[in-house]
Each structure stands twice: as structure tokens, then as C-alpha cells.
Amino acid sequence: MAFGFLRPVSRLGAILVVVALTAGCSWVIGDTPQSTVHPSTEAARMIQSVYATITWWMVAIFVVVEGALIYAILRFRRRPTDEGVPEQIHGNTPLEVGWTLVPLVIVIAFIFPSLRTTCALAKAAPEDALQVKVVGKRWWFEFEYPEYGIITANELHLPAGRMANLELTSDNVIHSFWVPRLSGKRDLVPGRAQHIWFTPEEPGWYEGQCAELCGASHAFMQFRVKVETPEDFERWVKAQQQPAQIDTTSPGFQAFQQNACFTCHSIQGSPFTFARIGPNLTHVASRTTLAGAVLENTPEVMRAWIRNAGQFKPGHAKKGRQEPDLMWNFEHVPDEQIDALVSFLHGLE
Ligand code: CUA
Image (tube, rainbow, N blue to C red; front, side, top):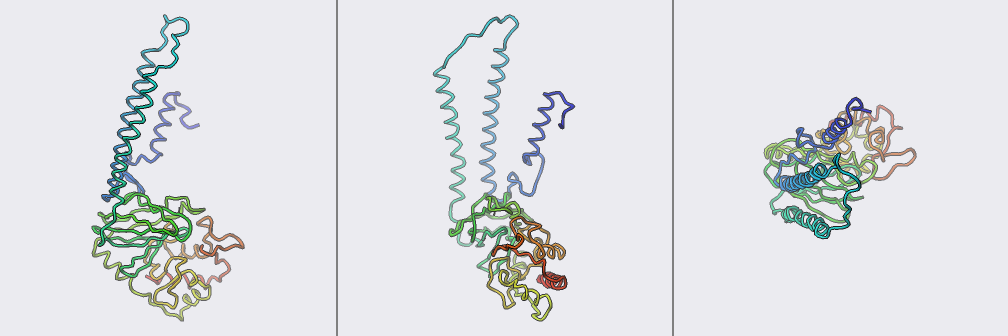
């Protein structure tokens, strides 16, 4: 095995170092896209402070317990002059009571910082917060801005400095909304609206992930949050509010009709504006990603995705069996039609 050349003690040390590094110690080794220890909102900082408080308590407890253990090992070790079996002790009431009560007190004490933060984060968001409805789908996120009449997917745009109040729900199984750098986790539960709110501060991209096991492509159910300056956000809103400019006689739009893409996907500005099963495609070319933010949105990738979604995300089309709410296989469609469709969709900016 690796480290076989080291002495046992050094080998153990090397293994511990590797475990510590691979177990997500980004606190120590720097930033990572889904790091929980580099918060960038007040809500995320409150959560991190609970994490930090409890971690330092645990470190203190570890030092005391291990210190006592090492002291006992050294102080009471067998010496060359020792003979026979040491004195045998059966039970020590003060000790038993002590090591039952002390951990109990510690566990109870842990409740306070987490309860305080939980209560602070459970308050209702102010009325003037930006409302966004988030719907968990298989396996992607839909974002609707009722205030602006926009429906989009995979990429949530938010203005810096304005509180975002997200209403979370699902139309299938339970998912969980999680952007580690912006907030804690909250489940998207069918038939029930839950909320999560935070105020983004720094413009930039923030990576999000479904955090509830929701089926074969759970790990591929991602999303991205783009925090923008208020001016950039206004510009994005204006662009997204425009209906798509469509030439209904173009081969691409014909392919969209012939293959019944409109059964699941809507395009505002076309005759097909009501389907909510798949992502709304009105401005699909303005997004950087596809398929639950796991694929780059290029014409080549989009082409491969339409042909066979299952090659990228398990649980999608299986041979002879298409699930109604999942992206189908279009392997039978002639190349010219797919090419026209992809260039049509990539024109929807
Ligand atoms: Cu949705 Cu995991």
C-alpha cells in the first residue's frame, strides 16, 4: 500500500494527514467552490459561528481527554520492578457519576448556540425582500421571479445588497436547497412552501447543490447563483423580460414543434408558453450551463444532451421506457433536424 516504506508510527501520521486534507479541511488549505467555511452573507456567517464555537469546544475536550489518557499511560505504566497483577478495582461511584454528568452538561450546552442561530434564521423575511419561487425538479432547479414575470432554470441571479427571500417547494420528491457560501440547507417539500432568506454581498458566482438524496441523479442536481451589482441585475431582468424573437418558419422552430419539445418546454414569444415540466427556454442561450448546471451550455454539448440525456445523467431515458417528467432520448431524429434545433435554441439569448 501507499506509505509502505514508512515506519508504522509515521505511516499512521501520513494517513491521518491525507484523511484530514481529503475530508474537506478547506478552512486550512484554502477556498473551494462549495466551502461552508468561507461564508459571504450574514446568515452563512451566523451558521459558521456555531460551527466554529462547537469545533473549538471539541478541541478543548479532546485536549483534556487525551491529556488525561497520556498522563495515565505514562504515570501508571508497568515498570521493571513491578511484579504480579496490579490491584483490581471494581467500580468507583464518583467517577461513574462524573463521566455521565459532564458529557450530559456539555451536550446540553451545545444546544444554546445552535438554538439561538436557528431562531434568528427562522424569523420572517421583510416584505421588501426580493421574492423568488424555487421549485425542485428531477434533477434541476426552476427559479421564478413573480415581481418581474421571469421563469428560468439552473442559474439564480440576485442583486447584491437586497435581501432575497426564496420560497421553496417541489413537484415531485423532496430536494434540498443549499448554497454553502450563502446560507444553510432547506428542504423543498412537495405540497408545502418553506422559506430561506439571506442578503448577498459580493458579486460573483456561488455554487449550489441539492442536499437531499432524491434519486439516481441527485449528485448531478446542481445550480449556480450569480450575485450581481444592482445595475447588472436590472439589465439582466430587462433582457429576460423580453419575449424571444422567433421565426416560426425556421427549420429550428419546426423541429421544436415536430419533436413535441413544447410538451415540456415553454418559450415566451412563441405559441408555446404554458409547459412547466422542463426548463423554460425563452433565454436558454443566456445561461452558462445545462442539465442541472452540470453541463457547459455549448452547441456541441446541447446536441449530445438532446440526443441522449441518459449518457450524462443516470435515471434519464432508459431503452424503451421514457419517464414523463424527464428529458427524453432523441436518438432517432435526423442530424439536420437536431442541428437546426440546436442553432435555434442557441439563438435564444
Ligand atoms: Cu434533488 Cu438531491
